[in-house]
Amino acid sequence: MTLEWHLQGEGSPDFIDIVLKCMKAAGKDHFNRDFLSVIEKVIQADQCMIYSFRTETPDCYLSFNNNHQKTALLLAQKYLSDGYKSDPLRSVIDTCRHQDGVQLRNLADLRPQMSELFYKTYFADPGIVDVISVVASSYGDTILMNFYRYKESGLFSVSEQKIRHLFWDMIAQIVLLHYSKEQTESHKSPLNTLSSREQEVCKLVLKGLTTEAIAWQLGLAANTVTTYRKRSYEKLGINSKSALFALCNTNEN
Image 1: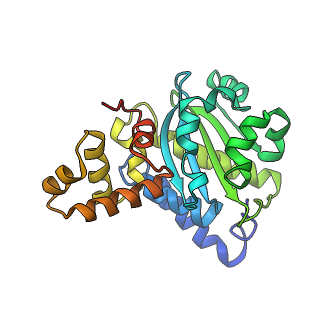
Image 2 (image 1 turned 30 degrees about the horizontal axis):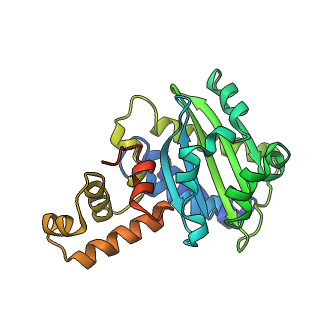
């Protein structure tokens, strides 16, 4: 994690401003979009997934992908369908579910406990070379945050241990506060990373409307709707309607 320069010298005000803005957005619909600034500018990750493990089957709170290679686009769908069952973090998740706290792992920590199939599917094939995984529990929820780096970006650098743990504890508490059980379900939608128009298009896709029907309802050209849908899928890290349904935990009719 490249925090050294953020926590000293001229970088400090930018780092504090970005995280503070995200903290103030907790509990509001635009939280996901402010959190993207933390992902891109502070953590400097290429992809991020946030899952809730309030129950044995995870829900997706946030999916963001800044790498639009086809091999990377189905990771969330694969994980939500059955990949979570073989996640080497399951024991950590189960432990955290019964006690408040924050646990950190990177790829080097997880690799010895990881099956070859899991490693091939979620790391080798898409070209992911590192991950920072944060498991935290509080406010009646247990979350898993995965921050990925692709080979083009290289490994995360590692800050001094105390700084690293304090930083991730702060990020975890902000995320847990926003997605706490007191919040409405609309605040927990992965669609909140999208623009207003992109959200409209995706919500109508989830209602089963065709491209033509969406275009008519929104007063847009059909090819414009297609562009919004494609752009939304890229941002969410998916490439199909079925993946959108899986991401939003909605049954496809």
